[in-house]
Length: 433
Image (cartoon, rainbow, N blue to C red; front, side):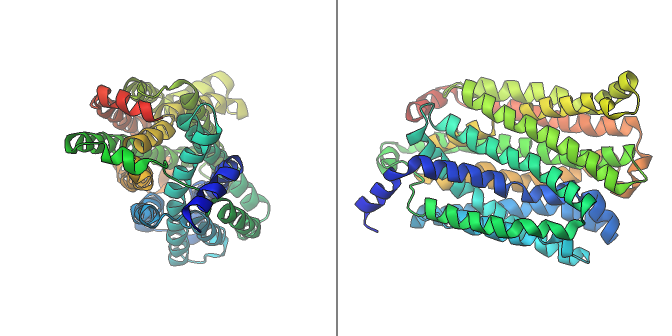
């Protein structure tokens, strides 16, 4: 398609393109939550060893991020958006089939291929959401990306609820019923985005206007952003892991019931992630990111650190009933606002800092950061004393407090990295919001 016609195609339906991309993010982000929320059941069903359990925990962040920079660079280099619908299709088929796995090796292959697909979806989709949303929403790129990320959190919330209930009511194999409607959505996504621009029309002029020192400063800021997201994603993944141990320690003799509690905790935290993303898009103004990123990291660290204590409060106040879980759900939500609310803002800032590399910088902030986030498993193992999930009933309050406290300290590191960002450069980049 000639350039003029391509621009016309993008201009005719930018609002439709944007909302299709936003909706697809909710769909794609359900699938990795299937494995996380069903980990207690998978460990029991497949008799996973300690090493196999660790491999499953680490495979999602590693392989979902490992290939993002490559596909993002290809998307920027050849101006294509095919990784979005292709990744969604691969993720749906593979992870929707985990109920058929009869061994660790079958599970890990389905997981690895599936999360590679989910990973390569994100840089392209986020770049399109930022660019299309800038043209269609009066609040601009930051709020457009907040809605995009919040939509993903809807998927993260629905994923554990859907997976644990389907497993409990019908059996895990019935998760495959979600594959056909997802493939239909893939077709709609491809039709909506194949001609949609994912970078500013003047990105080459913006790049040419920078001297070498200015370009280095922008890459330095982008690396600091990526480091912060890596720490935040490590805490994010770590909380999901600790929730499984915490739920299994509370309900040691019923894996299915423990999985439901784990799914509820994951859903509560994910709601906080979505709320935080929306609040950030509404209140974090371009140019003020430094203070906002530091404050959310330090504040979130407090709530991460007191999670197990909140569980004790719940038991003291409400006994052992469902109401006893309310404090933990609330703390999970507030902790999530602290470690996740800045993610869409960081992506928008990265795209403004490096407009010619919108896909690549998005991959740095999401994919590379998620790969580093795989360190959550060795950290959680260290903090918990190296025990397996089926040994969670042996955990003491002191061990659980140490684990949550350890991740709280990690989150505080993200706040320190935020304080290292150059304020003047952030204000300069705000002019291109």
